[in-house]
Image 1 (cartoon, rainbow, N blue to C red):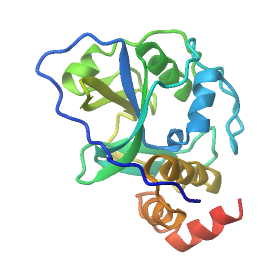
Image 2: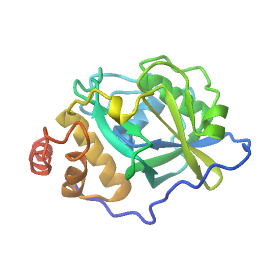
Image 3: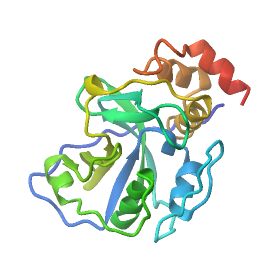
Length: 226
């Protein structure tokens, strides 16, 4: 699994002091949605490879206008249980030191709302109020595990948004991810950051929840058989 390494990798800039009007946002995918084909199912509808769920898609099925590799501050960890994958869910804690490789997609605010709804097994169709997230950096819009919005800053003046659970890594019930889930991560890391399978395995196997269950060698061996 190889790809041309894109340059440069971007980092979000600090939030502006006052909110600016926007019609588009950067959706920062840090998990399996780094895989463009999988994200395409959230937008246009369909069933991604290795997934047992069919997504209804967004109201607006236009594919992202741009995509860039991104590094988010914080850490990725695996916890709880995914209804889609059977093993852990990939979650983001912006608090700890470190950086999380991600992929930013330029989408409409409406599309971001519909992607977030589908992550929580809800029907798309309701626009989220993103004001608090953009102006303060965080907004808990519901009790679910992907219903806390995080704004990591801006790229080219446009907000960088993602979603995660309301708890911190320290509070999480850690759990290992499945091979199919890791395969989507690895494909996304290759597409967006140009990482080799070995580089992806070294990263994924050391994330909290995967560490102690997976090793870089077993990730490589397993994913090569899929």
